[in-house]
Image (cartoon, rainbow, N blue to C red; front, side, top):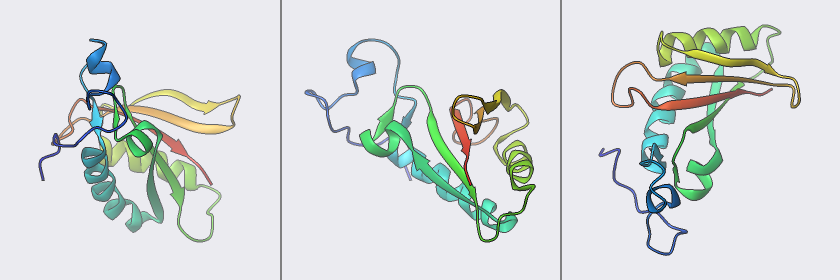
Length: 132
């Protein structure tokens, strides 16, 4: 799969607004986000978690900044599922993970930001939302 190929809808020229405004190149496309999520889901299911996409990549088909990934428990909720999810992210996304916020006080959601360490998506930013 070519992770860089995707038709961008929703702009007059068919190009993302960040490219048109010379802000930055597209960081994530829907095709790339799906490929990342499918790979992550296969691993997450083994530890009782599921993966979902959200944000601009899902509804616009691209993001100039990051990929929003939602991680949630599969089945009965283990009281320690969030710790399992954080460990899972650390192990499967890369050791170079950086946590910007362990808990967003305003929304009561766990949010972690990571730069992917290895593979086809190395260097790309992912925001993880841990939701039950």
